[in-house]
Amino acid sequence: MSKRLTDQQIESLFDFCKKHYVPHYDLQVELVDHLASNIESIWIIQPDMPFQQALDKTFGEFGIFGFSTIKATKEKELLKKYQRMLWHYVGDYFKLPKIIITIALTFILFTLFHFTERDSSITIIYILAIFLFEIIYHAYIFPKYYKIKSLPEKKFLITNTMRNIQGSIAVLPAVLIQLLDFLRRGGYPTFNTWIELLASIIMVAFTLYIIAFSFYVPGKIREHFEEQFPQFVIS
Image 1 (cartoon, helix red, strand yellow):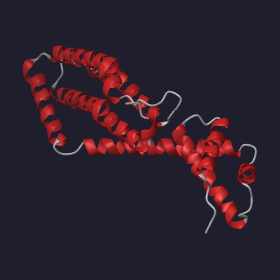
Image 2 (tube, helix red, strand yellow):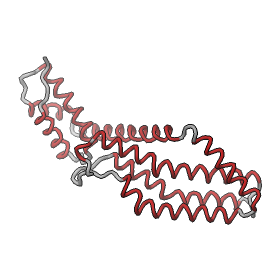
Image 3 (cartoon, rainbow, N blue to C red):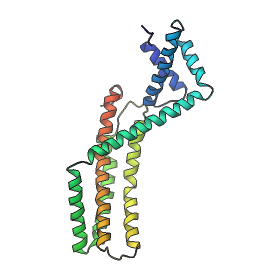
Image 4 (spheres, rainbow, N blue to C red):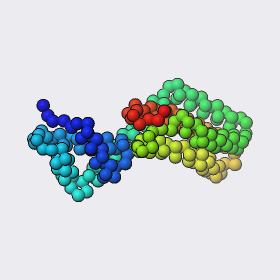
């Protein structure tokens, strides 16, 4: 039977990662798994080698900058994993009946543009509503219901994913204003039929993006965090 690391030795590997400037716990987990595999591989050949010597041998095999390279590689892999997880949640969200709802909302908005001749009023009200929602969301809704609440001494890369989501939501109104302004600067004092349709698609798409990345995706990421690291969750 091959020799395995004890809980105390695994904890020593976590301390080793902290001393080598790996502050994020989820990244430490990846590196500890890598180090543990190397040490246990050494023990297959030299089962009597002490743990510290096996760790030193493993670290020595990395070379001068080897550990930094492995750390960067594992960090990149972990961030890619979180990005795949994020877009998996987005794919789960944008399914039937939301596709039908998207088409219906686009048609309704297009009809308003086409028959009311109040293009400017509709876009201004929409943008103001988005700004108001963002103020309420960032000040109250997100901190109360979706923010990952963990022990303050622990840092996690997954929270970076959540911050990126919040950042993307924050810039959406400015992007939307630029797009709609671009349509108007194209020589259309009022929207013609095709511009009305394009504006309707853009506004509905932005609305669904905001809903998905304000509620569904952050909720799923928080659930994932609480499942993976329940010992660090603050209730």
